[in-house]
Amino acid sequence: MIKAVRGTRDLLPPDTETWNRVEAKVRDVFERYNFHEIRTPVFEDTALFARGVGEETDIVSKEMFTWEDKARAQSEKSQQLTLRPENTAGVVRAYIEHKLGQSGALQKLYYIGPQFRRERPQKGRYRQFFQIGAEVIGPPTSGSESPSRDAEIIEMLATLLEDVGLTGWTLFINSVGDANCRPAYNEALRVALATVKDRMCGDCQRRAETNPLRVLDCKVPEDQPIIDALPKIGDYLDDACRAHFTAVRAMLDKVGVPYTVNPRMVRGLDYYTRTTFEFTHGELGAQSAVLGGGRYDGLSEALDGPKAPGIGFAIGEDRLIMALQASQPAAVLTIDAYVAPLGPNTNAEALGICRKLRRQGLKVELGDESFRLKKSFEAAERAGARFIVICGENEVTNNEFSVKHLATGEQVSVARAELAIYIRNHGVKKPGGEHTAPDDLQ
Ligand code: HAM
Image 1 (cartoon, rainbow, N blue to C red):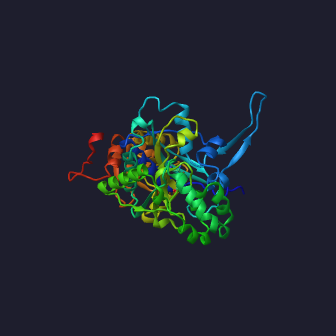
Image 2 (cartoon, helix red, strand yellow; image 1 turned 45 degrees about the vertical axis):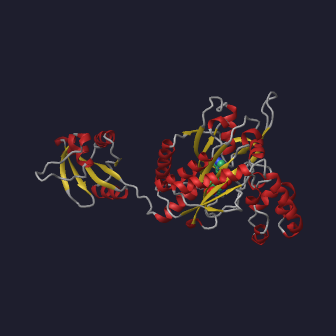
């Protein structure tokens, strides 16, 4: 038997109901904050991630699905391609390629889609996973550098998580400095690491030389006390970075978004400057980050684009859903009515009734005339139907259909023209015995 590849999974109903509900809510939030959707390709030139995310990051050095796309004609060149491990680099590439900065307006873009990382699969960690992300990017004149953007994005996330129904999260923030003050911090790290790196893992030993900041991403338990004792980025911020971070925190305080400063959080991707943040949730176990993000003021230039400061985030949708499902009952699939053809040549009649009811906006399932009454009832129950509509030969002749409310067992005869109204109205009767109809159907 061929199975889904390790680290990938099928999302099945009724879980997909939850995924769709979350995505609809999220789109609604993005719209209110004036974000617009961008869809970038699922694979890109490998160089985009090597240069954007950084050669020494775990993502680029260990986790990418990369292959050589061999030339198929003399006129073509072979290319190294990679399944996107994240979407920020792709969005910034598109920003540069389509000159989105030219209008001078701030670009507020969001995406929902699969990402790919060759990590060791475990709970909350997959090789194909989904991100819901957003990026705010533009020329400095658009206000893209303002700490207001950072605070607004973090405030939006608090609103978004509330709207989808996630409570109990913790927000960690930090500042990782910028091109001006980071070199001094890197040097301080290098000096501190020189005396301790021999006691650390192989990755740390290498990174101590090549990219000391990435030592802080290390997850090896024995290395943690050594890392905790290293110099803190917060002590090396220059005045501008310090003022930026103070302003972001003051705005979060003002709007009442609670946070904790985590001076060790440098977020595993090289493009970050200044503000970084992560929301974690206790239900998620070891993979506790529901989402992460930060500012990347130099990314566009690193990809040969114009100066275009930006900030963004990505929610791990798989983890968000997992945290939601831990606190909410599973979605139950229901329909309004099950239409049961009974007897020869009733299938077409039943399909006609379904068509009419569906066009009135009702959720309806169609049975089959080969079913007996008992089997039709069983199928209706299994489909989660509120009503069963019996479509037998007599009913068709009289243009009156038996409609049974499955929960109460109440059964009435309803004229064809009244079926949608009756079902929509839950079969609630007015005292006079007439069926009430909602306004839109009257
Ligand atoms: P990231 O922290 O690498 O950031 O990923 C963001 C989120 O994606 C994580 O917090 C986690 O919830 C989820 N995630 C990552 N890897 C996996 C996995 N293997 N399985 C399941 N979920 C996973 C970024 O990707 C940045 N592009 C975020 C960003 C946008 N920064 C600025 N703009």
